[in-house]
Image (cartoon, rainbow, N blue to C red; front, side, top):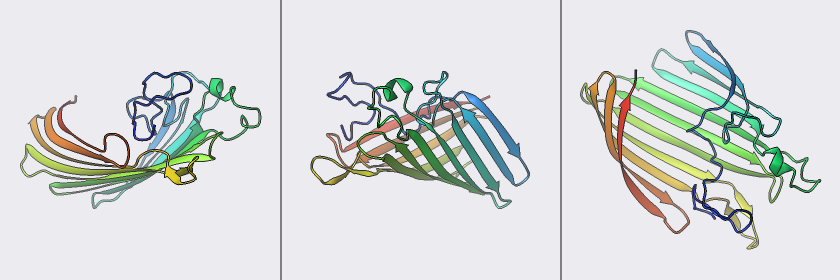
Length: 234
C-alpha cells in the first residue's frame, strides 16, 4: 500500500478505503492542560494531553498521556528559533490486547522532535521547519520513522499585494520485507507551491496559486492542483 496516501486498504481486517493514521494531525486539536511562559526575548510552553501528535483525542484509549513542550528564542533582528518535542503512546488498548503476550510489553510510543525558524526583515519573511517522528511498533520492526520539512519565502511588493513560494520534503525509514531489499515503508515525496495574495481589507485576504507534487512510487507519481483561499480573521 505504499504511495496510497490517506486512502489505503488492506487484505486483512476491514477492506474499506479509509484514511490511515497521519504522522501529525494538523486538523484536530488535543484535550489536556497547557502552561506557557513569555518573556521579552523567549517563550516556552509545556502540555499534558490525552492523545498524541498523530492521534489527538477527547477520551482516553490506552491509559496513557502525551507530554509535549516548546521553547523559542526571539532576537531583536527579527529572527525566531524554536525547538519542540512530544512523546506518548499511540496504540489503543483494544489493538494491543490482540497482540501475543510477548509483544504486548513492547514500546508503543510516538516520539516527535522539531525545529522551526522565522526571519522577518523589511518586505521579506523567511520561514522553515524540520521535524522527525518515530513510531515504536510491537510487530514487524522496532520502529517506523519519518522526516519532513519545508522552506518558505514571502515578499510583499505592494501594501496590498504579496507573492510567496514554498518547497516541502517528506521521507521515510527503510524496512526489509520478503524481497530482502531495504525499502522505505512509504513513498518519499516533494511538493512545490507558489501563491499570489491580495489584501482586500484589514481582516480579509485572497490568495491564489498552484501546487505540484512528486511521489517516488505508486500509480500516480506526479499531480498538480490550483489553489484558492479566502482568509478571514477577527
